[in-house]
Image 1 (tube, rainbow, N blue to C red):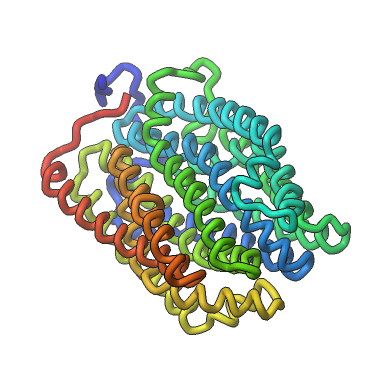
Image 2: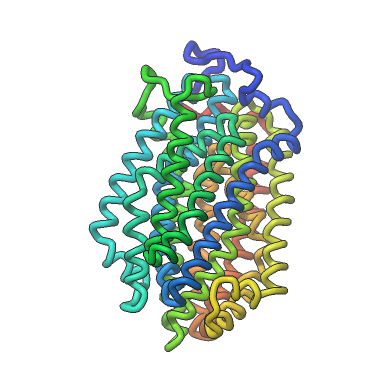
Amino acid sequence: MSTVSKNSSQSKPISRADSPTSLGEQPIGRLLVKYSVPAIIASVATSLYNIIDSIFIGRGVGAMAIAGLAITFPLMNLVAAFCMLIAVGGATISSIFLGQNNLKRATDVANNVLILCLINALIFGGLTLIFLDPILYFFGATDETIPYAREFMKIILYGTPVSYVFIGLNYLMRATGYPKKAMISALISVVVNIIFAPLFIFQFGWGIKGAAAATVCGQSVAFIWVLLHFLDKKSFVHFVRGNAWLKGQIVKRIYAIGMSPFLMNVCACVVVIFINKALLDSGGDNGNLAVGAYGILNRTSMFFVMIVFGVTQGMQPILGYNYGAGNIERVKRTLYKGLVIGGCITSLGCLVTELFPNQVAGLFTIDEGLIEMAHKGFRIFFLAFPVVGCQIIIQNFFQSIGKPKVSIFLSLTRQLIFLLPFLWILPPMMGVDGVWASMCSSDFLAFIVAVITAIIIFKRSFNKKPKDNVN
């Protein structure tokens, strides 16, 4: 690939007091607090909303609605995949461009992210709406659960243009020096959700589609907030009419780096299909309850995983900027601190679920059979959870410094390469418990592979200044 010179005529000196140049100057710990804490707050708020939303659905609609919601997880992962393809790729290369002191190219990225988010949303959302029922049946829906899954997903898919632009620009906002504003936009979405969800579900009697409508309402308000930021010429990086709006080199690089989170979400989609099938097959008459229990486990685990993702979102601009500037020692220190934080977060998740499984499950439902099924799942599924945080940090580290192939490999090991063989072997031997054991075992093996990969690559490549490889 061609290189970008720091002295290029396209580059503009970045010297404003509120510019991202502090990413290469301030202590790493202070930067992690500045960038990660707002991202963590936003992630916690989003996770809490997802949990509260599930509680509203479980208690206000019923156990089958929880199972129907669980059936939508694969499709929700696909929705996220096509959004993260743009959001993460755009945020990463904008940070690297800023590290290279190239403000014009960072602005080009903002223009391209907006257009690509709209294109992805219209194509993916439109096609999925046309074939929604066959897709849901393929993902494991039954005649009892598909009405709930269909009602929920229709509303979500209608809102994809708004949600894609909101998420894509929110990632870019954080990467270009506005972590607190990015946090506020996420909080706006969550607060509006929490206000409207009980109103739509209980007061208006809309059931599960009320939860989806509340989600779209929240994202719509946040979308306006984020869009106004990038239309404001006072913002450090903002839309510029004369800059490139669909530039081939930038689009190619966005997709290349965004391919890692894209494949991660696609793999999650594929894996959930196999998980649902294994639960339905091994659960017998209680198959739908087993799927509902997985819905509870998934929401709970994602609460802690989303906190780790908040840490990775805070690390991303620090890593991208310093890698682009050649500050390898700062890159290494950022990774080390991220590993400690990520491991502590998922260790706490393991502790809570192992000590209080019934209490956690009881938040979502009053159905005793569902609580008992989730209890067993918590005890097995979360055994290897402490190392999940470290694996996620390592995977996102390579994504943040523009090494998508390594990140893709690590995402595949956790969600595909190890888990699918375990799902084929263990459930026939252990029943539903074998499904939980499969996920636990794959998490541990993926962590081992991530550590070995990181050690090898550090020895080979990180003792010298990186080449400028962003177009």
